[in-house]
Length: 293
Image (tube, rainbow, N blue to C red; front, side):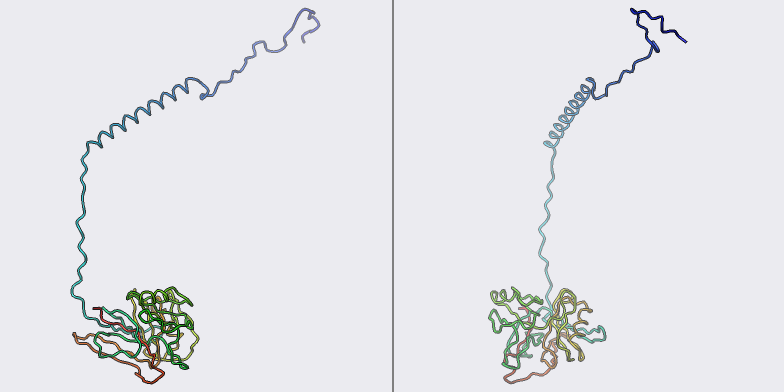
């Protein structure tokens, strides 16, 4: 054991390891001057190489020859002699509902007041369109004939607008197509809606009768008739299940109509229903398809 009492007043004694090493911290690399000099030099070299490359590319583009290829004019599609206006007829059955589909070919739709003449060879298909009221013998609902408003009302929400020879079907209490039909000398009438956007529409009448409908089917306009007595519900559901996109009702029961088909280039006219006369039917009206001239 050391004796510390031998230290004089003018002496200092150091206790511990006389050669204890000291630790020196190294600076991070980004704080050293040579790191930044190297970084700046690399950036300058990269910029010079890019400038040289762009200049070489510009010179190459200036001397390159470009070939321009023009497409040849496309001739309009030529349709060979179109067949005469006619109606294609096909039968089908959905949900035990027997139906007949009438598809007009090369014929344009229009409305008319009064019975169309089946001997008029220009007319290939005719169906009664809007209902006539029993009390005042007027057309039920809005009705436009060649731009002239003959009747007003919206008791039935389904409608058919014929504008510029094209049919639009729908369901609405009010539609701008009514005004457009008057402005463009078109046609318009209302009926029960049966199918809207592929879905069956419910209606109040519950009785059974022969049924007729104006339909948008497979991208075209057709008429469909039931071959037996059907409720409006079952008929509308069968149309929806058939794949009809939109449909409105046409006068059913014993409503008069006819179609003209072609068999071996010989026109054949088929009629149905009763052609009645009397005050009640003064405003009887039809949707007909007439041969396109």
